[in-house]
Length: 531
View 1 (cartoon, rainbow, N blue to C red):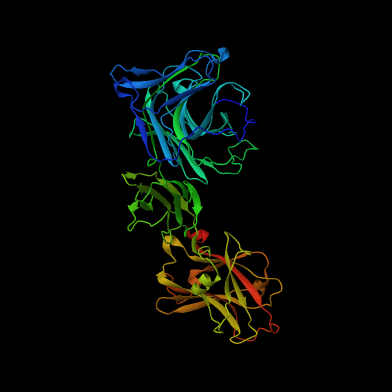
View 2: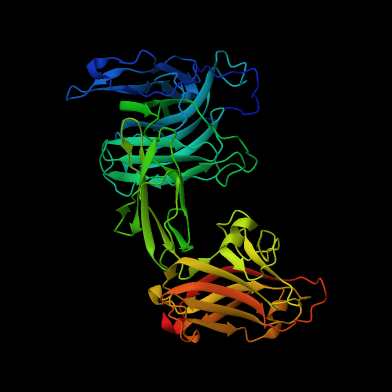
């Protein structure tokens, strides 16, 4: 919107919003009149009174609303005019309407308001600028200021009528024949962060023409905000429409709207993790997303690109563990939210896994107790645990495993073993290398580190690290072991993985000395000449 001074925000100013309710409203202008009796129209500046809102009939007899300003802003005409269909507050909301890109008129905008609040400054004394409406809101512009050939849609966050954006979040319509009507939507979902999306369709329910990138709003300074802005997110508010022209020439504005609606059970799920388009995603990634408050359930579609399947049973909440994913694979997924009235079909998201298959990243364990129940040490002394979750020393992510060992005591070696619920095929996708990321401490005593695999038939093989002093490395190191080196083990049916330190002889550690080995990402990859 415009450029009212933002320095004059006083706590005495209250938005004129009625009580909280979360219904829906819609307006079609059928019969040449307003069906809703709750419409309110405002302008800024509101001086000349030449901003009007006539309802007109098209050639086919269909009626629509026109926003018409016939006075230039240079002659105290309105820079923008707004209409609010209801005082109902919405949290998660989709605001939509038919809009018309008309001719070659320049510097004309129209669009939608979501989670809005406003006050009316009747004489300009509160803002020190001019009388009229002053608003805070999220906005979608349908922007044809440079004619139909340059049609675009873009998003804004507005504080006291002022755009606080330093970065355009927009989508340019990729074609030229744009002098026609479209159906546009603004969707807002979530409360911290807030996800804001604008879309343009051929017609309501028709093919998508363009969609903006998602604007993610937090209480901090976001990359798209002016450098010093840390405005809190808008968590609820009213919905509306607006027209705008802040330039003296051409004079005023003339835009049209039809079939306007604001619905709380309309916005699609947002905030996908992994992010849409992400690459190099971990093969043990967990899916999560943000749903609207209206959602009573959900349907999840997931699978390799081009082959999504309905997940049955559906997830209980807004997260899903798909199990181990294939490396180097592109996946698609979609969340359809199920509300009281109907289901809202989600958008299709996509991500691609990295070439490594993660066997263990240690991120899923809540605490040491949980980790020790999966990675079991071989020390049977009651009350002692030698496999611990470590959040201070880690290679990647937030967590790693710390294997502590006191090999001056019987059995003179310490092991951590993970037994898989089902045998694992470690050759999927042509993988043939086991990779273990580890580090030790420079005051550790030199001892043998080793890895042992056991298959479903009970066959096992142990590979020692070639350097006895490896456990003294302070930097993180990658240890690559060819699966073929585990002689006699069926690596298409791996049942257990053991990481150990020691050789069964007294290590020579001092009495009470406790050495430590840290293990993070354990994965599989293909050797370069095998890819």
